[in-house]
Figure 1 (cartoon, rainbow, N blue to C red):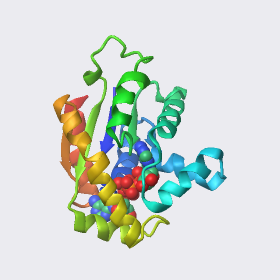
Figure 2: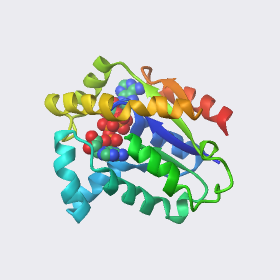
Figure 3: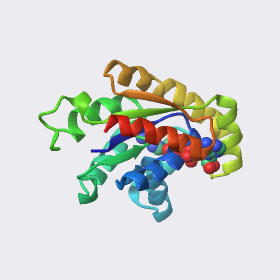
Length: 193
Ligand code: B4P
């Protein structure tokens, strides 16, 4: 079963690749960034709370994210696999995800570390900044990007060690053309499933 987490700094191509790979393996692409942005657009209570963090490039509080992801994973389309893009993003999110979100699934008898794999997309900082500035989303300005990178190094990068220690991590070079990255991912995933 394809159950993957895409990890990486802002602009690494998580969203770009998760969407392509989800189509290839016919599993839902679950992007916490996309779900948050659609809540912001609808001005839902979650969107109103999330907006102030996203505009600054800060992370939305863990509990809001955990509830949101749990709800999304309860949809029937997630029963036979998923690609999580942008979640977990903190050690707390990762610990809670391992403990709670997978506890009710059919993998109850498996060890937690066998239940999903994590793909870490690696891209140098200068390339990330260039990519984000040319994308030009509302949160893609110099100041916010600087903060998002800092937040990544402080809060998300520790997940590399977290998942390495659990033997769940595979790193892929994201500093190549979109097609080349997709092909590397396909080769990596075919070995994992
Ligand atoms: P996200 O939506 O997850 O966005 P991202 O990390 O900035 O970008 P991503 O890595 O997906 O890059 P993309 O493919 O688009 O997060 C936005 C915000 O939401 C966060 O700052 C935070 O506030 C909040 N949030 C989300 N999840 C959260 C969580 N779990 N906890 C708390 N808060 C959370 O690519 C970027 C650009 O590069 C695109 O223009 C693309 O076309 C280009 N590109 C991609 N691959 C390329 C390649 N190989 N070569 C050249 N260009 C490429």
